Image (cartoon, rainbow, N blue to C red; front, top):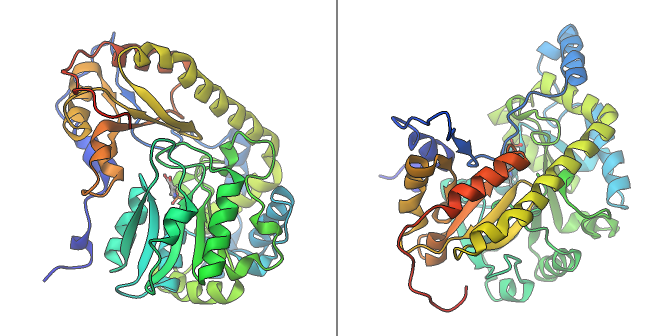
Length: 398
Ligand SMILES: Cc1ncc(COP(=O)(O)O)c(C=O)c1O
């Protein structure tokens, strides 16, 4: 017998942490950890103070509404309507215990055993893991050298069992921001074929574009096709408080309510109050955070020549991530623990974001740079440039 959890692999970030065991890092070469896409600093002091006040409210310690606090649903709906220049009402918003749960609840509401969901590759591994554990087939949609998925290629993968296509933009692990035409093409494809388009916008607050990243919410009937997912983890550094959101048709949210009621009953009351306070008060602070992330992204581009000269290539860069092709003969899966031992760098290999059938992950690494400042990025690239491992024989350009 194979249990549900046995159908999938172990959590990649945990596995990578084990590579650190027994390795010591000299003072002149401390560990540079670019493995995890989570802010390490606590939320800003005013938000912590607001949370301390919220702790004094009796209702913070009780169960709340399954689909989240009405005030938070309302605030999110009104800010989203403005940001995306569209129309979103509170009954189209559900609050979840983080964006991973938002994805899980959405899949539970849409799919049954044997259904199919299309995921561009490289994919976000927790999406793949949840589909595995749900008995839903993750159908890979390879993206090629620019990491941007193609709706025409997706069309040929749609079968009577396809329920949805799930996109992540800005992308984890690829960093790329999907052009608005890409989103529009996928939306049209999904509507045309009667499936759903799930768009995980966990990193939307760090998108470099000044304009709305897509026009989808401006369609008056967007909720017949689009399901948008969001996370409060990155924007306000609330990772430990587990707050996310699903935006979709009220009928879908009624299905999702069954899942949420059974799994968590309600999202964290303290976390939700923190998210609401953040939405209402931290706009300027978040704009500053975005500027800093955009500067770190620029630092990646500035230092690329150091490693380009050694045969590396930058495939994608944005939000929290740079996605790199390395020049070495061995697989990134073999090289990742060696990066820790030899140059004190912890990064995830592309193999963790690819189906086993796709060999391209062996040539790739994800660098999650959000916690590394400019000086750290320079140190990272200097260390990568120092590697003298055997090179792959040149093949056709990927
Ligand atoms: C694409 C994507 N979705 C969801 C999540 C999880 O977010 P949350 O902390 O809100 O569950 C992450 C976190 O790394 C992510 O990269």
